[in-house]
Amino acid sequence: MSRAVRACLWAAIAAALVLMYATGSGILRDRERLAEMTKSLQESRARWEDTAARKEELQEELKALTEELREAKLTLEESTTRAEELKQDIEELKNQAAGRE
Image (cartoon, rainbow, N blue to C red):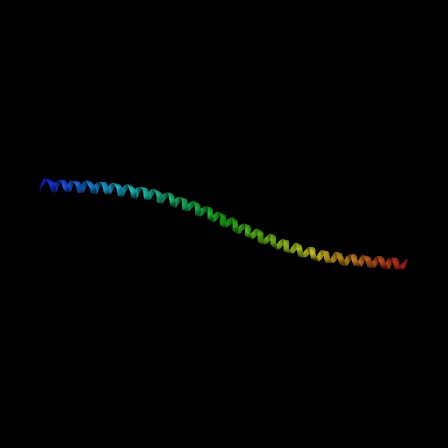
């Protein structure tokens, strides 16, 4: 084997080693970045699930309060109607009592 061929082979081997090192370090960085992103994704998902659970709780609470409010309005309307009827009854009784005197 001639010196020129041997030198070319050593240069190719050196270039291959440099390429392997560069590629290997890039892979390691990518793995670290992937691990960080996976951890961040898991934390984000946990926060999202917590928020979703809180939202469902609040929606249930809102539904219950809305129902209570609807029932309170209905009761108020019924009470107002009944109060008006009682006022009329009282007025009639007053008129009847005044007529007897």
